[in-house]
Length: 110
Length: 110
Length: 110
Length: 110
Image (tube, rainbow over all chains, first blue to last red; front, side, top):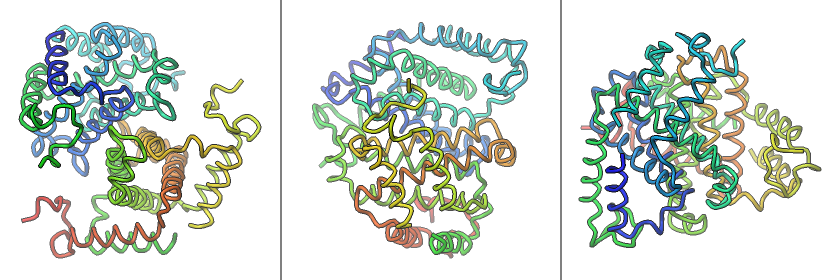
């Protein structure tokens, strides 16, 4: 992970791009890349989308990850740490005994 | 990275959730989490948003990363590899001499 | 409004496109068009975005409206009616005396 | 349509909210509301989503339309006019003889 973040930061520093990368526009960018990923599934079932658009899906996923790592880096967030914290929090929201095999949102648990 | 993907997959397997995780709905989920991140910046400048919503920003970034790693795992994509490939491709689209200090889209280069 | 919905439905019926227009994919389409609108504002302040991208902003707004009217029509929703109902509901969430000149979310009212 | 735009503008003027409604944040808002609409379809087929979430779908559609009409009004765009222009343009991109019964994107026409 550290290696990837270093690569990403080198890429933008070579281009002197940090001046444009304010957090609000980075959040917009993640959302736009997520839509470009989703566009590959528009009017299609998953299997058909993957068969036709695998290459583009891979690229858009990479873009989402790149911008997300950039924003994490700019906010001094440790990616491993925030993911582990969130999984832990989700584990409390969705205990195995209430959520196993169910797609019910925790706000709708009995 | 491998460690994170293992943790994420254990989380959903304990809950028997892979049955719901078709790629189309995972792509939708990434987009929805990206919007929840962006919501923290609605009607605000970056600094104000971070000061007020730092905790939630951290959580939504984690959610985006978790779903993106899930989808990468399900499509058998190596995350390090797709990020490096995309940075390389971006480097060809945005050579340093044309893009240094500029936010012009490559389709609008002279 | 009725005239517009008629035009939109004629457009898709001439192309025999209703078969593709399931509500889930229409909801995806609205989201994708909203991102295309937003892309015009990426890395820019509003004024700059409007000056450079006014034409595209107009087109993306039209696309969002077209898909929203389509989905409303397919769900037998009366557009005037649902807008008036929602304004009324918002008026209860945001009474003038609590919300005048303030961008505080109603969930954070004292 | 004029009646709806008048109602929407009265709503925000009573609350003195135009100061917050810069076009970039309105574009963000449309995108966020589109995601809230889409959330109703996450992990579900259309029919199931509509049966469970019809009320919320109606409200989110109203929100998308309200923000879209607001932004159109602020940019002095005539909604009927921009929709008709866009349908006309789409008609040229997707002539009936090439697109009837097909969901192929115009960029992929032979």
